[in-house]
Length: 362
Image 1: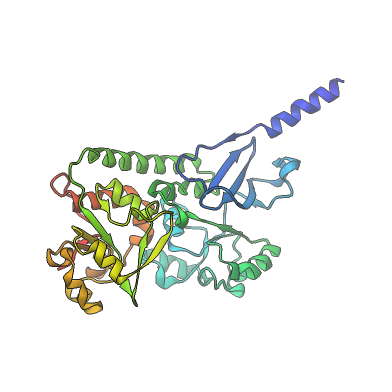
Image 2: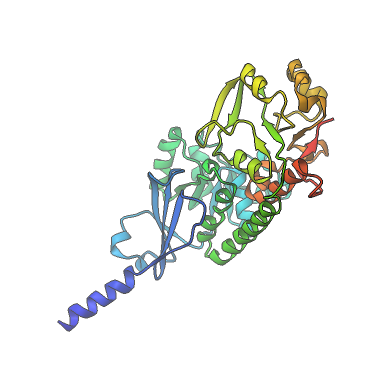
């Protein structure tokens, strides 16, 4: 009887756990046990499980109920990243030394990092959807951070047999800017840096919410148009998307806030004209760096109110300065800085900011 009680107590110690606080994202969970972590990655709504795996210093510390799951030894020593957005998360944690592979060097905005990677003979693995088997094997990475693309499944299965786990990072599917930023907590787990990950996220969250509160009572919300026409189709974010939320939190009125869902919608040029010709502001019009360049793309743009009033802003300011554009890696992972810039555009009388990414087209 005594042995049974001791056995039950020991089992309780092994299985007792707590779930780390994930405030905004529904796409992952982290459950802490005594000597290991159980991580789950879901779809954007948290309704479908994509992956489960265990992180620990050694597999002996993992409870028998979880030993059938993929095991990853932490802290990671050798790893690869298929996306530049993931590289920035690793940089925030001070964890780029162990990189043995990246997608493509030419897409990395941090040229000093590129130099270091080339000196270490890091491998180029290709892009998600075109994962290169030979390069991935040659990288000798224990983990590859990537996006899920079905065409990569064959390579993923082959390298898994050789000891390389592919982790699907789904931050790009998040609809709330703070949910996107919260993925730093997941990256932190691979390096036993949960405290640092929480500190980084809490700083971003605090700044973001303070800025949002600052303009919560603003009287007039200017109307905002986004993106541009491509071959007769204008892709616009739906009302519950990342950019729609950001515009709303910056005190703007997103003109397509009636479109349901978290993704994007395809609209005709005529539909956009009918709704957006009188918009006060126009942001993110493709790759254009000037009004002349934008008009070259489509001469009808000059009919828009925002064009006539030179109230068009794009997020490629650094390109004008001959610098790599860090919008898609640094900016999206730091939504408090993006919010700061958008507020200074929509409500410049309340907030003036030296913008890093956005500039007014002239």
